[in-house]
Length: 574
Image (cartoon, rainbow, N blue to C red; front, top):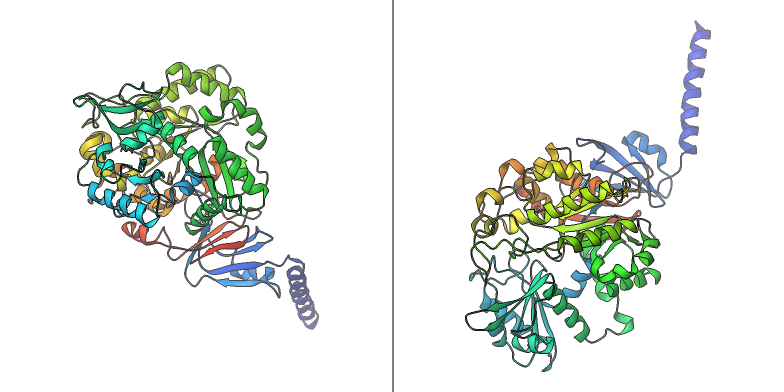
């Protein structure tokens, strides 16, 4: 009996010593998080662990707090979440960080919830105050951003004449909230060289008042791009020591919103070289995914191919961008059926226009695929979506679309029910923009599309039911880089007025969170390195004050980012 007891004690002692030895052999973490909800984003339903350990910018361990003890060393920081929530850092599937940087210094013309401009008089006052506060001399360019006729009391675009009442000695150009159009005053149009008789550019238009024989000042699509390029040329050059300031300030805003991957998803040549130069100087902390605009970079695709799908420093090219149509809230998207109420200057039956001819769109896609690169195509209207799907189908049959390409359709707002299964069949990733339901849902319902089509914008639930892997995005600066509001909109689909827009297309909060974490990582071919909390992945993390999956759905917008961690280091703390 005594012998058996001795053997049992010896075995127990050996196990204890072996365990202690195993603990000594384990690598010691830089940080161990515990004490809150830690959501891994691994799997089809929410999975939680008790602790997560980080070492050298990578996730070292996920599991129980008891097991995590073995990774604790003398210098390990033990981070008690105190009931807060830890999730993978958010990934915006479509945004424009450089554009946000550019407009951040302009006159702010947005309505609530992101601004205060609710009428044309409000807009004029903001512009006038901006000129005075910045002491802009006569002849100096004035740029405003974010006006939204869908919310302003007049429900129409400002005119050149109304901007003339602000100033006739400053060229003024104001950009619509969608970024797809803008309005210039008379002096701006004169300097731009645009008259009533000026031909419209291909894929754009200078809007005319046929009754008065005058330009209204509004410019859409490629005419708007022409205006913005002119503005850039007229803007005094930034001193070299300050050329990156706005970009780095925007990077901080992305961190504040819980994001460590930062997108510039329609870059002109100057923007591409600006971001690349910032990286070469070691100024970037976030990982920048940049999409060259096809039309402005078609002759340099071979050069940018060297950065395609692989980071050099914090810079990589994720795809090439094409834009097939405009904005639904601005009534320039290309639809198969007419707008409920036609936009200013158009007759009943207007359904928008494509930016490319079919042949030009085909040639562009074929060029991109022939260079071995994938594409993201902006398609808001269902006619634009049809065009894209038809062309992808044709190019697949020509063996130009390869299996490693993760081609995306961006926004796809007015997506018909019959188009969703076809998107799945063609292996395209839709990146939907559900914040439209919240910000412009009433406008879509009452003026843009009417009830039936409005109820089906951003059809996330149909996508889910069809087995689609989809993402959602902010489209900053159309909205700030605010993905929590995108989740709120995807879950609730509630408009500004409280109307529920298509209750059958609401999705669970977990699926919305997947769309900005693991799904978005997949879209960018980074699912092996980020997007979920798994051993070996980057320690890109976000701490939230509440669990997005447990709060009441209508309270999701109140959830706050408390800290953002990039490669194991805190880059934002509230």
